[in-house]
Length: 274
Length: 362
Image (cartoon, rainbow over all chains, first blue to last red; front, side):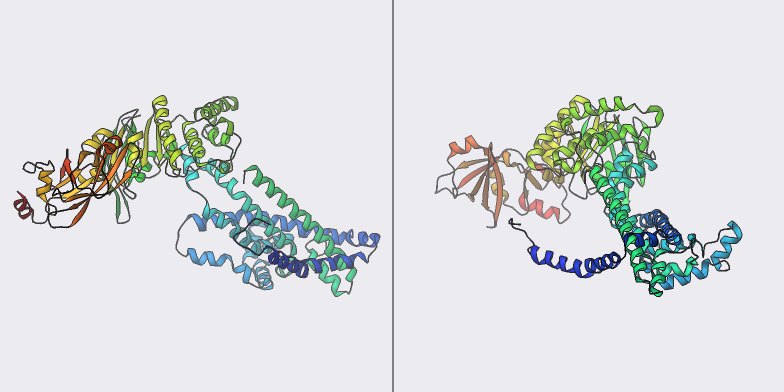
């Protein structure tokens, strides 16, 4: 760092970053690890390979992945509409996007559960016409997760779309590319890294989400029970070791998945020369 | 492909960007659309390309009305001002794009595409960069890749929007000549937009001068320079001295070689190199003094101050070959005499009190 920089302050900034990371992230997380180290390997395996726990892991990660995928798809469309077109009430809809950020998640969960339960407004409609039950099923979890993760996708894709050089589209059109080709070969590849970030954020949020899910999920063991709920259950039973074992496992899986997504993103960026 | 524009008009809200433009461009020409910024030249180019629809008027390509034809089907090559290269693709993929998006029935196979792309990259002397990404190229290189990409689909017309605007001076000079030679080689009808009159003169075979959405003049660089149709063209192309008869000393204009009796206007435009300057000895009564001069290479620009008719100083610019300047031994502060060899007259009718002005001077 001997070369002169316009903005000085590398050392204090790095120091602050390390202190912050230690206090807020590393120390709490390492406590988690130390706590679970009190368990023997056999005990640990016994806890996390319990059928009910395995089922809840499948429910949690499965629904978070599905929800992140759906949110990415619809979030992209919403961002597209907000950036590319002008219409009455645009600012209003734009503000609406952030609402799931601000709303207490429990409120969202209760509202969703109310309208999607079998005799609720939308729930009855879906059950009568398509025979689909949303609330108290894994599908309900997915709905709740989509609700809370849409803003992550919209807010990551929107700025990239805003900055997008539309003359690239015109150039492609002048060379005879169809609208579909322009989207798939020009626009989408440029949005993909941002979309992937939105997906990762949605996924991470979805895995950890608790408040909105427990009201709509029904929390049936082996069917619609999520990992955070099991952790809370264990804690309520004063089973500290069990809770930390599950939490640690969840942490490791989440970290591994996010790492994979980041590597994928790195690869995408490198492949497109950025 | 020949291009005919009939009565093209385009408005953006209350602003009239183009006002009943009529223009014919024969096949194989290299045409410059020249004008100050905001004159509608880029809009006109985009209308020819099909990227913009005119509010009124027709675009005929090879004699057929193609006004409503989509840009995808016009068979044009468009080079954008900031090149619009696909950032996520290599140079090779950029150039191959137009060939790869063709419908299956007319799409060449990959080896034919590869041959063609390499041939085009060789044409622009950049084949060695084929696996780079646009962000890794210099401005001049991007410009040439954009051109190669536009040529890949074998367009009937090549349209370039401010092709050299974002380049530094030396690269710009080199690319201008290169574009002209490339045009001679390919002989495809080419239209480019520029605000730089030097660039238009140097590159184009025909220049269309636009101002405020109207065509002021169309012709070869020689015609535009030597016979400007109006005072806008005269001032926009090259440097010019403007003398308003009712303001300036007509007596010294007479002495300077201008015949005032049969002028066809009240504003005289005189090119700097049409003014001859001679040194007078110190005691001579001349209202004109050499105040400064600049070395422009082959010519010297002289800044003359004219203590005119009513004593108001006015700057006159003259140019002479630098050899002649050396021989004349002129220096700052010298009294000089001036001889105007040629002038263009404009503004036959002056809106404010034309009679008074004319009577006063003649």
